[in-house]
Length: 298
Image (cartoon, rainbow, N blue to C red; front, side, top):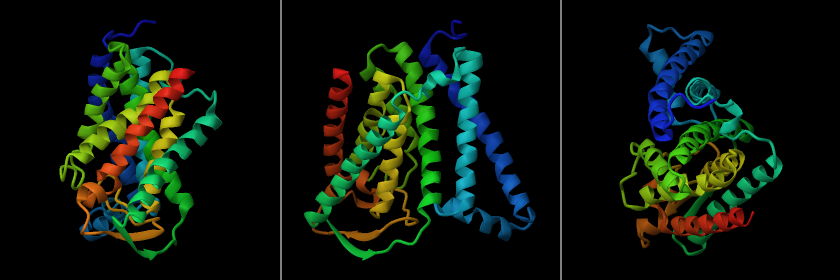
């Protein structure tokens, strides 16, 4: 069947209030259910603040954070399902859930993130731009991995599976569709700490968070490579002791380090983390070229 609304860009704009509605309803219900099951007194402000602390602190080792991410993923899934069924009138699976080459996409996504994040870390470390101060590792990787995977799939389902998918219907040129989707993805991160500390974080969101992650989708319309690339990207940043898009995490780091004051924040990334480093941005450009050439040949 033809979509009820033919313009993909218009379906994209309609998606946001629908997503906001489902997020508000499901998120609120989920939060109150968790508080009820944990015996939290809703009238006791101190108990409520204590319960909310892992969420506010971004504690990815907390089961409460895990349930919060699960409800967010559920909200996005229901919003996309609603749009696909009643507006796009296409099967939900058409957002990019094919299992063809699933194993290879998972491996390729994880390896690509390791090369980019690991490569940036070692360049900064070997050049002396960052100084390792402590080595520590004492967290449940299993729980952290699931939380980050929920978060990665949530964003990929939203930004690639629905938004980029629909923009590709309106703009036949993949670069235009990726460029427009980068605006939405970047706006989502405007409120992150130190986002406007330099021009690098914005460029990283545009070229890394959107074009690098979404480029393969424009060829395959499959979510698994960008999902596991996204997962590995965030997991490895935290593992090497960096902030994730300006948000400080220490739930699963194996290294603590400080930025060498003799190096500019444009090199070290400053308070925004590795995504604020021009070294990371340079490797992102290389990654975009390699991914484009790989899928173009296929």
